[in-house]
Image 1 (cartoon, rainbow, N blue to C red):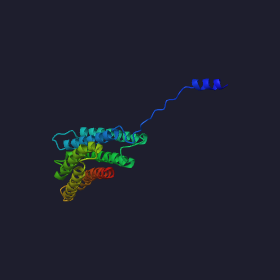
Image 2 (image 1 turned 90 degrees about the horizontal axis):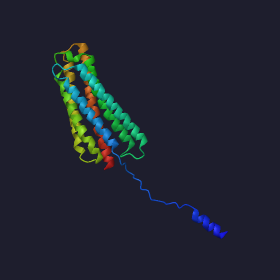
Image 3 (image 1 turned 45 degrees about the horizontal axis):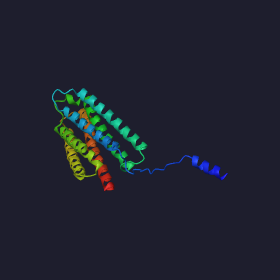
Image 4 (image 1 turned 45 degrees about the vertical axis):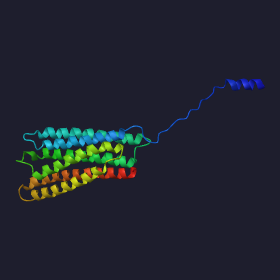
Length: 227
């Protein structure tokens, strides 16, 4: 009987146990890639708005291309949300990832609204748009480019302070241009209906400037937490 027990033990397959290493930090940079793609779309959006100042521009084409870019941004945002829900360990706080993605999408929504309203209201048929409106678009273009340059630096959380300081400065420039635009609109230069239309566009431009600052504020919050 003892011989049988020994034989049964010898016939039992051995189990080899190997140590498995788990990474407590993500090994993929998909979140950073999505933030970068979203910020590149903002540059595309402001560049399209700049086209509206060109003589003989096809305003309908600009509006439609802005809508295409906005739809692409929506797809990026949805992909980001899916990734948040399917990733066990995220590169930084989930709530901050969600906020940053949402705020980048908000900026694009405002940019698209500007192009759509200018086209639908027929404002580009005026002899010229107010100078202050072009100044606001220039501010947005600068904010978009700076934001696009900053997003890849989230990987290291380095050299970001200048970004949010400059975005804040540009937002102040945008506020001044917005106030001067309102002064122009209510100066009696335009008829009442045109004033109402351009005021709606002005509000979207100002909201886009603010939205860029919200993005920068979230980046600052993330950088402080991760430092």
